[in-house]
Structures are given as structure tokens and as C-alpha cells.
Image (cartoon, rainbow, N blue to C red; front, top):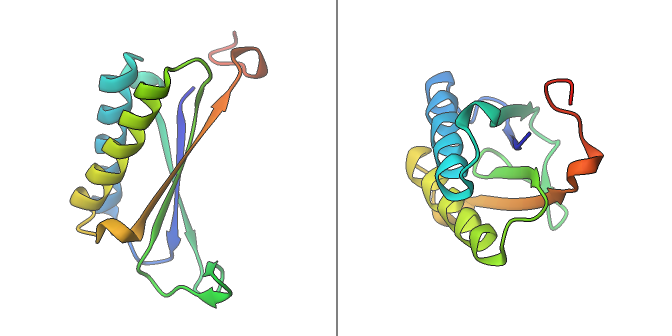
Length: 118
């Protein structure tokens, strides 16, 4: 169920970088939460220039936003560790400045989802 959606300006990330980021995000989630890696989904959304703004100003290609939807019930320490690890690993793998990576985690109650038909 863990689903990570990564948004950036179109053309910012190469296919090989996306693949490496997907592996890094999957590894971080699995190692910290103990969830099987085959549950982790990573999606990339490439937005045309002029469609991402911060403070009313359009971004060109210098930020990556990672939105993680994870199962509710992880400890505060695990969530903090996961956010820090994701921020670090995404910046490192993507060759990005740490300030260019924004990570958000949203907890979803188990009864609010269906996975593999259950």
C-alpha cells in the first residue's frame, strides 16, 4: 500500500534517475517500516513548466516533491526516521541540493484501503 508520488518539472529527472530514486524510496520504506518491498509503489508525475509554484513564483526544474501515503500506526520515531532517510537518499541519488527535496508523509487508516483485493 505505501505509495510515493514524486512530482517535478517535466524533463528534470531522467529515466535512469527515476529508476534509482524508486529503488532508494523502496529500500528506505521497507527497511524502516519492515513492510515487504513488493508493497511499495513509486510514481513520478512530470508537470509542464509553469505548473509548479512556490510563494507565487513558478519553479523551473530545481525541486522534487515526494508525497508518501503510508499505513497508519507507525511510531513517531519511525515516521521521523523515514522522512529524514527519504529526504537524504532522494537528494543523494538525485544529485539534488537537500533544500530542493520536500517530503510529506500522510497516514492512511488500514480500513480506508484495499490492497490485492483485501
